[in-house]
Length: 111
Image 1 (cartoon, rainbow, N blue to C red):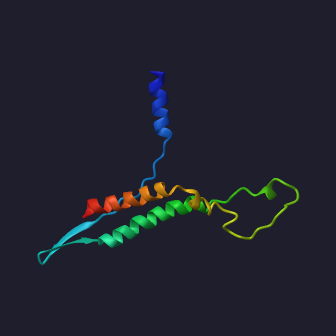
Image 2: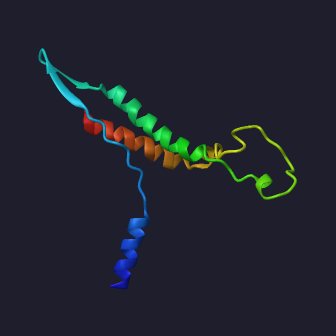
Image 3: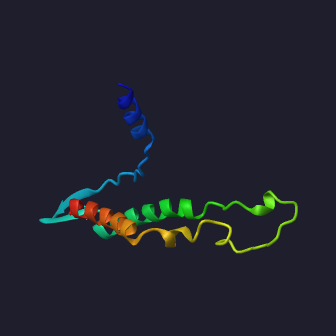
């Protein structure tokens, strides 16, 4: 019983990114089927959402040693140096490829 409770706690702690659903209307006009919004527009929406999620992490401020020390040793006005902007470069290309593949998979299901 305790093992089941620990397993359910681990599952509840695991958070997945949920991208909001996009409503796509399938239209039939003059014997022509089309989607609204169009597939390229839907791709753009999905990719913008993905980039926004990545941007949330990359724009978080880093800890500044000046907050903990009386005298600050270095001063940097560069926004990229004060955030996790460089973190995107350390993400495995496989992980990024999987994210983009997931977007393309959703679009294939749409068409």
